Amino acid sequence: MSSLATCQRYLPITLLLGLLFTGCSPEQTRYDTRFLAFGTLMDLTIVGVGSDLAAHAAQVLESDFAEMHRSWHAWDPGPLGYVNKMLKTGEQFSAPPAVLPLIRLGQTLSLSSEGLFNPAIGELIDAWGFHSNDPSGSRPPPTETIAHLVQQNPNMQDIEIDGLLLRGKNPALKLDFGAFGKGFGIDLAVTRLKEMGISNAIVNAGGDLRAIGRRETGEPWRIAIRHPDGDGILGSLEIAGDASVFTSGNYERQFTWEGKRYHHIIDPRSGYPAQGTRSVTVIHHDSTTADAAATALFVAGPDNWYRIARRMGIHYVLLISENGELQMNPEMQTRVKLVDEASWKIRLSPALNPEP
Ligand code: ADP
Ligand code: MG
Image (cartoon, rainbow, N blue to C red; front, side, top):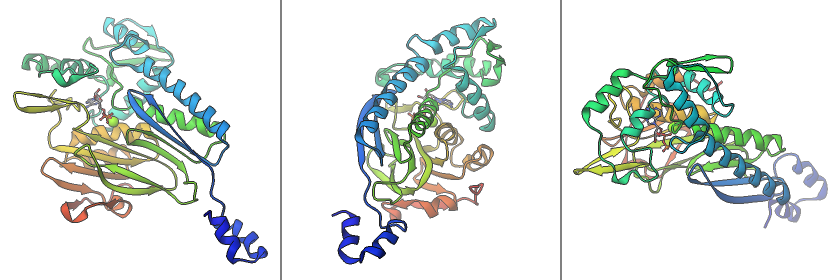
């Protein structure tokens, strides 16, 4: 039974009219759909508009995501492939419009992460075999290859931007937007939805998401946080308004070689998969920053995530270390409800930057 019907049964009409403006409002319509984007299933929920508009919005988003996927694909030919080819020549060239904003944002985010988030290490990602649809059959690259790439130290500041023109200053540059392209895409999708007059929605790419507005009942959205095992739920939190929740985990893409597991989040300082972390969840306003920060804090690990989170202006972090400790800032603790709190050894950090 809807909440409006409940109101009507118990209340005289004058009171009911008052309540329409104070919370006992009718349940809104909800539209759910699912499509493939960035190689993951994208779940889209839209609340409070007619099904025609919701279905149209879903179509627009699906085709936007397909275009983004093509433009930013790290190993299929396309605009990013062209940029990568040109960056290596050291010559100046015109930036394809789809790629330029990500290069600018990548420079800023990389700088504030002290280079731990580094979308210029595509050569390393490639050497590790993660530029393939199925990396499960890969093996570690030769140590000399890794050492050489680390020593060349490709980074975002090696890209000179002059208006719309780009120039690469390091032959080892190869861009890979894998750590924040999905976040940037979700931000664009939310902008699109808002332009279409949609103010309650969730755009969810396999657990990484941005939520705006509220649920059909008028209550906040309830969001699940993925368990570091890759399966199941670690906890939940509520979002009312506009926020993104992103998790980076070592379970996402990986292979096993001679009994040892190698995952896809690479520490640019060593050239090897980052050690010490199982997963990091970040809540932030925009998805681009949340996505980049989840990757950067994963690399920073249990001893350094706090410093990098402060530098990146992040307000909420939860990290599970390889030794099974759950670390978070006190502001995160007030927001997250853990499914099995007693099973975790919890360590609280000092307060992070308070939300404005
Ligand atoms: P996922 O999107 O799988 O949840 P991430 O957002 O952490 O995970 O992105 C991981 C991807 O980013 C890798 O597959 C690789 O393409 C790229 N990557 C790996 N290490 C780094 C790093 N230190 N900085 C930037 N990008 C990275
Ligand atoms: Mg990321």
